Image 1 (cartoon, helix red, strand yellow):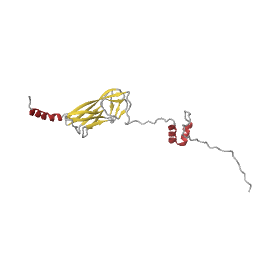
Image 2: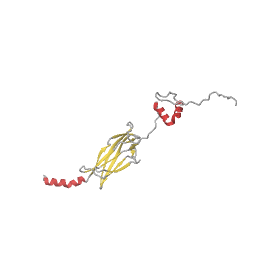
Image 3: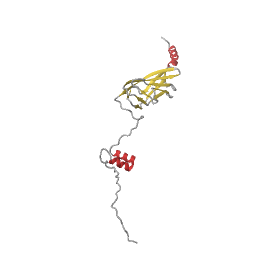
Image 4: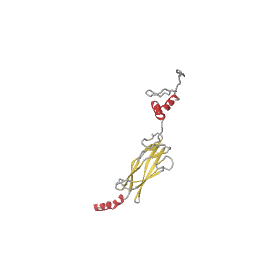
Amino acid sequence: MPSKQFILGFLLSIAPLCADSLSIVLAEGQHAVVARSAFSARRFAVRVTDGSGRGVANATVHFRLPEQGPSGAFSSGLKTESLVTDGQGRAGVYGITWNGIPGALILMVSAVSGGRKAEAAIAVEISPAAKAEGGGKRAFAVKKGSGAKKWLILAAVGGGAMAGLAFAGGSSGAAAPAGVVAPIVTPPSIGAPSITVGRPQ
């Protein structure tokens, strides 16, 4: 049976080897379900650690989306994004625009530091049933007003006269909503002519 001194010496000899290894711990985004053809504000984050579990600072982390099938593009428009870990070994990406192909995909993650390398995979599903997330970049569209808002917008944009024309010429023929005063354009009128003859001088 090995002595305690031998076991202690063996553990001390392999400690540097364990500390020299590199690992990727998945922190956010694993098994995420996202909407197709949509911008996503969801964050995908990892933590790069050494063999003792301590965070590795300044490690280079590469995130890579599939080239074909269910996939997307990072905010740069590319399918790869590279970052450097912070002092705690953390790195993350967000702002991916997913394509319109539903299905499962793998977001590959690789980390490199001082000749050491590690890889991990984040499982993601593009679902046609998932709703687009809020809080991200979105294209703003002006919706057609209805009810009182419609008339207020017309009055604000076109001025009183234009609002009157829009109100009078609306295709729906509906009256203005309650509480909204529609401007009335009155055409000029000319009365009956009159001639006054004064006393001759």
